[in-house]
Image 1 (cartoon, rainbow over the protein chains, first blue to last red):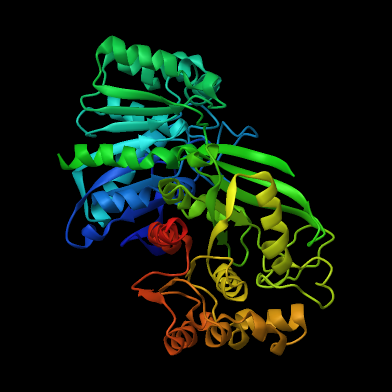
Image 2: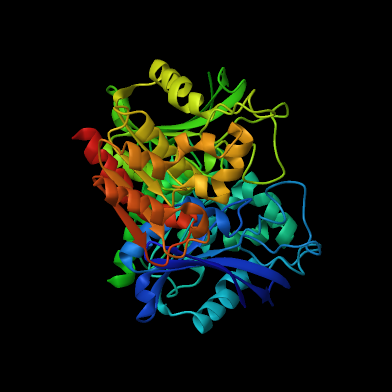
Length: 275
Length: 275
């Protein structure tokens, strides 16, 4: 692992690190914010999964999360959204291939050799973080935006006991019924049917989450039809899931929306992580 | 004037607008954040001037200023840092030409036809803003980063009565003695001597500022030698200027530094604007 940059930020350190990934068979880059408290000992971790077209950098520079993580004394991890490189398969569309890993392990060509984001995010990167940084891996929480919201919700529900809380900003939450999901599941997994194991609405119906859930989505989100928010809401209510889903009037899908509610999301996770 | 985008942000609206500039003889773009209170009537304005290589967008997306401006009920203006376009002179260096207007009116070729950022920022843009938006132009304050800190300090001191408070992040504050200043004054104004009228340290010695000043600069700023912070500090103290200059331990020149102290800068201006 090598450190690409370190900048002091809100009393802590915003680092960017790269490493050769075994899961993705390419170099992967991630951002890690460590609050000042990490100098004294391990701190809890909030995963921040990003959306289509994003790298590790977008949420790290545009979401304003460090201010609130510093206040809560928790670390932030900003992983990349897919494998990268000339040898890695890609697609002309922005929502397939590089920048669009969808947090699944592909088993179809040409994606199978590198597109193993599920394994990367759930196994390889946590192990690397635990080895190299003062993180309390018994206190993890997860959030994400758009495709990253899909990632956050599916990881939280498929890995019971791993995360104490889950939140999402404008998550893709019923991808088997959406253009943002069906094409990707067909491409990466061979069928939409195979993607059912990675559909937050179906997971909510079957498993739910053993902890608090917080979802914010804007009423002016330009991708409303791709998100499946209503189906997820129905599943949450149907299950009696502990959680809050808020439709935020006038907000769209952008980082201006994300930044507007980041304080409340980080506080929400802080409460679960320190409680 | 045309609106390029509007995103709801922290209860207000982050807009991006473009217009044909008479001063710069090209299209100019700026960001304007209006807090929710602007729906009810005119709100105070904080100008945010950006540094080398920046457009209107960098501070608007990376500084996290909207959160605090919303709290204070004040607007934020994010102007571009130079004229732009194929017809506009440029230089291969990042610190000269497009993206490096230095907030002066050039009178030397090839810069003179378009590089009139002083007139643009002090006359044309304020008039345009006053005409089109609910802004209380009797309540203005100004801040900036790096070259934008130079702009903020020089505007504040050269336009007595215009701004109630001035702050800066890692400002270039003695440009007649710096590689970030001497070359630009020679190019734009014909000589370093001509740039003396735009040197914050000299202006502090001669005029000072009739209001509070707040400066933050990082002790790990990688451009320390270009900033002239010590000379400016001496001038502030020598004059008995009301103000605070803080050396922030471990911080560098990046937006991670700027974002870390934006809350305090916006609060500082809010106090002056609402006081």
